[in-house]
Image (tube, rainbow, N blue to C red; front, top):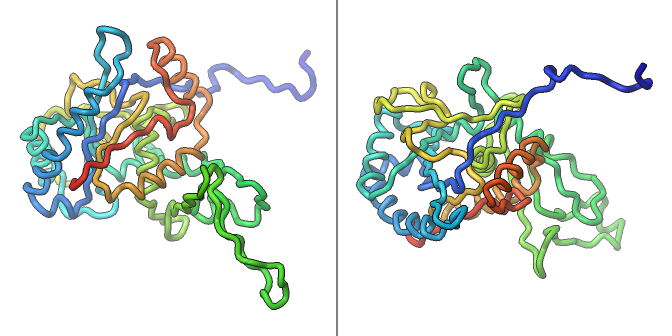
Length: 328
């Protein structure tokens, strides 16, 4: 007889946390807006020509897992089909791949930014609301002296890395002690770099997710940290025909273009991006610092990396790195 209040569950009723393969590094060759593609093939050629020496430097600096062994590195490219769709996959993707090849680069995985909002796993009809699921996993870090006066991120759509300027509740004429206070970064080193990140706008039923939040989901996907009821998402789908449809929604969220490529998910990521993305990626780090990842997923990464002798930082944000080449 069990003690009162003890709950028993069938093992089969507990969702199994699916594991994923890992590269040592996921190397992003770029992220361009539709407006960049509209500038024509010359814009793409300039992009990959500028990116190549930095890609080679990252590859050369990658730490091998063991003496005599080469690190597993996969490449990827993110296309913005979420905020605008000025062109079709059939028109856009072939010139993109040609420009990369002409610069001596290979794109192993091609991803759609809209897939960071909602995605579907192979063999499953129901899509996974990736952005929504990450939102529910945000655990705000309360700054020192926090009173909880501000509503939570799930209601406001704003996430910060510290203490905001307090809202004034009474007229200064009625309260002489009520003076302005500056915002304060929680983990400031000397002086603060305070950031307040907008995660979405619009009504709850028709949210438009921000670029910063979708980029956060993109990093979590590349790190292999996303699950939907135990299922790994998104899962790259092989795409070897070379023929692309006229509708973005006809494409899987992540395409595996090279069947010999190292795994899409990796212990760490590096993104080679134009400098205009630096503010966005600062916001990404703020989000990643406050996402609570499933314990079973963290355990999988920890165990796998330990077997390979690979050091993976405990903080998710520290697994992410960038290169912002001048003039890109």
